[in-house]
Length: 271
Image 1 (tube, helix red, strand yellow):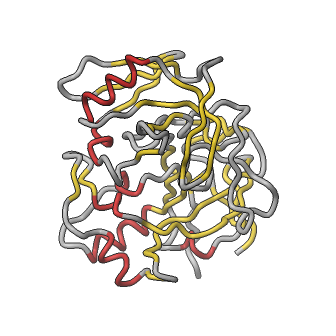
Image 2 (cartoon, rainbow, N blue to C red):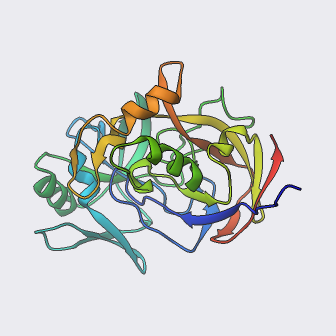
């Protein structure tokens, strides 16, 4: 007798600006890019090169919140600052992300000053308009798929059981937010997401495209905004290493647009 456990969507996390803290929502629209508002903003340096916690771990201390049509940014010791959540127009510039050129829109100069002051490094936010075209790596996408300023895929999914398995191996347990997933599932076995090929959450089907190779951002303490030791990356590499990468979580590509909600069940269509 096998007990049937339903796999469910436990939480949804968009990251309105790449590298900053994420937010938690009860439901989200899925648009052409992926989860609505996810990584449509990012920070660039004076050479228009993208910036992440890899260079500026303090980014994680900036907490965005959606307030109507504005994205409010909160950081200790600074007056909260607002930028439009989804600007309708802007001055176009070319930015570089992982060596790829993308069209982006500039924000106001005072936004750049606000970020530069808190992070102690010259930078400014840029927005990806609908007209900007950035494709998922065709080696992994069945059909052509687009993505925003992500690390390459529209979604990252992780099971709570996978984190629990990892935490049993760590001296100091870590929270899920270190791994910056968009979708967290409950009711699955540890690393069961690795065995999924196509899934359905609510009304949306997803291609499970590739495991996520992790980087040193996972070693940033999200409460202090600084790198802290070699874990969890070192421990992950010890038992989850493949082709020189430490794997944790699965990158997904959505096959439709629509809506998903916390509590939606996950069906495995292909494994």
